[in-house]
Amino acid sequence: MGEHILIVEDDDAIRNSIHEFFTKSYFETFSAPSAEEALEIIKSGTIQIVITDILLPGKDGLQLTSQIKQNYDIDVIVMTGYSENYSYEEAINKGASDLVFKPFRFEELLLRLKRVLKERRLTKERNRILSKLENLAITDGLTKLYNLRHFYHLLEIEIGRCSRYGHPLALLLLDIDNFKVYNDTYGHLEGDKVLVRIGQIIQSCLRTMDSAYRYGGEEFTVILPETTAEEANNVAYRIKTAVEFENFFPEPENVVTVTVSVGVTEYHNKESLSAFIKRADQAMYLSKEKGRNAISFLFAENS
Image (tube, rainbow, N blue to C red; front, side, top):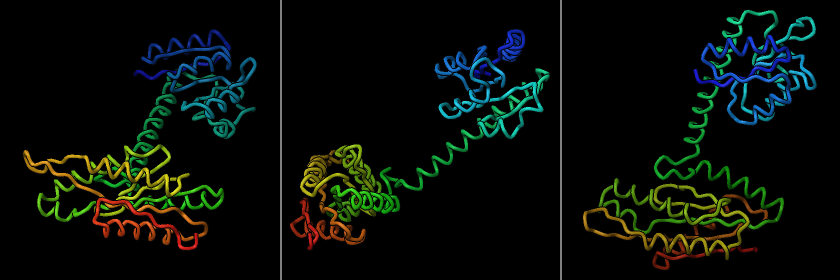
C-alpha cells in the first residue's frame, strides 16, 4: 500500500507481532518501545499513522498523541488494555483518530487502520478542493492576480494596521493606455495576452510584502505597506518602464508596445478607504491628462 506506520509498544512480543502482521499486509512498518524513540522516528517525516499503547515507560501514549497532533500531520490510533481507566472521548480529545481495546484481533486493527487512512485521504482531498475554491474566490481568472473583492479586504486590513502603528501606506492605480484601440485593432484574445503579461510585469516589480490586483478591465492596483509616496513613485517608475519596453506580437512580424498611466498616493490618517482609493484614481487621471505613459501623485488636502 505504501503507507508508513509506526507501532509504539513497550511489550516486545506484542510490538513484534503487530510489526510482522502489518509488514505482511504491505505496509512500511516501523516500531519503537517508547514515546521518546517514537518521536525520533517521526522526525524523519515519513510516518502517516502511529499506533501506540497508552502505558509506556516515561511519556505515556496520550501525551505522545497530544505532542504528535500539535507538531505533525499524523493520525494516531491508541491501544489500551484498561478499558475501565480510559475512555474513547479522552483519547479523541487528545487528538487520537481511534481507540482500540486489548485484546484485539489483528484483522480488527487492520480494519480500524484502513478506516483512518480512508478518512485521512478524504480530508486531504476536501482540504485541497477548499483551498482551490478559496483561491478562485480571491483570484482574477485571467491574470492570476488578486481580484477586486480581495483588494478591498486587504486594503481595509492594511489601513487598520497603518492607523494602529503609524506606518506609511501607499497605493498605485494603473491603467493601460488606449487599450480599447488595441482590442479593436487586434481582437480580445490578443488584448488578454497584454493583460496577462502586464500582470506578470507588475508582480515582478514588487517586494514580498506588496500585493497586486486586477482592479477591473484594463486597470490594476498595488498595495504598498510600509511605503511612502516618494518610495511608491520608484515602484511606479519601475513598472511603467518595464511595460514600456515590453514587446507584443499581435500579428506576425508586427511589434507593438503599450504604456500605462499610473496614479500614486499615500494614506492619510483617519481617512476613509473610499477617499484613499478615489485619490489614487484622480492621480491616475492626471497622468492621462499629461498625455499618458506618465506617473502622477496626489497627497490628501489636509496632510
